[in-house]
Image 1 (cartoon, rainbow over the protein chains, first blue to last red):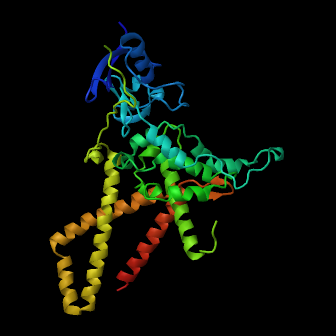
Image 2 (tube, one colour):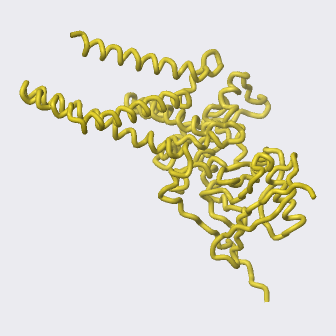
Amino acid sequence: MAETITLEVQRYNPEKDTEPGLQTYEVPLKKEWVVLDALNYVKDKVDGSLSFRWSCRMGICGSCGMMVNGEPKLTCATFLTDYAPGTVRVEPLKHFPVLRDLVVDITDFLAKLSRAKPWLIRKQEKPLAEGEYLQTPEQLDAFKQFSMCINCLLCYAACPVYGLDPLFSGPAAIALAQRYNMDSRDQGAAQRLDILSHSDGIWGCTFVGECTEVCPKHVDPAGAIQQYKLTATTEWFKSMLMPWRGE
Amino acid sequence: MAIPTYYPPRAYRTRVSTYWWLRSWPYLRFILRELSSISVAWFVLVTLLQLGALHRGPAEYARFGEWLRSPLMIAGNAVALFFLLFHAITWFNLAPKAMAVRIRGKRVPPLFITVPNYIAWLAASLFVAFVLLRG
């Protein structure tokens, strides 16, 4: 018989359960299998009622973020063999309301993300006939790291500040705001300042730094937030010293 | 009869445990770094008390020195010094995250930010040692 590994999966049915519980499954332990493969095996062969989100299986879509043995992980990039021998405990992402089994409600994040205005803002759009906004490789390099974010929300699950204070904008939303602030084509930094330089924005961050550690795309949200703290402080000083400067 | 599904469904929310920082070393290290600010405040307080004693004359200053030499104060200050060093070292190591310095379009390596911080720290310490130990 082939080798197996024990999967402990958190189950929660909002129509029946008052609180979640763990259910155990034995799944084949294959060298090339990730935790997501194991979950799909359970759904296909053992228990079709198991609910979880996934799409691309290759670390691009950002849907399959879950807690694996207590750590936020993309389950499509977390190999079963790394946990063998032993059990693999799969739970929904921490700090989010659980809708069912491993599915969490991310409405709060989506609202925060749109408040950070993660799109190019121009004071005046130039006509299409004038062509695209050009950028040098250096200008691209200034924000490229922050643009790698796939909104998988592992950083929110790793952030104790978000867990303790749900009003906190959180790592990914701020990193994405910073991504557009650093973009040479963008002119909306002033519009984002009020939202970001706020006790629920960057100043809520106490620099635990775990968001950066768990980020599967090496975005470094903690760095983005600290860098923005510097920018916001400089802007505040400038507005104090030169109140006539304005926009 | 089937039970109708209501929308939005009843979500399960958990509360973060008061002891969340005991769950992993990085969290604990963060809390220790935050707590180390008490040590910083403590040394400021000691320095202010010392200045006060100096102002009140030699007898008072000698009494202050006596108090500093008590075993309890030495032990307390040793612990405070440990946390102060922890504070400084962890903070200097985090500095490159906050400072994205670019030279000719390329971001400078983290060591270029960390090392000058340590050099400045060493220079300031040497200066203080020079002033105190000059005899």
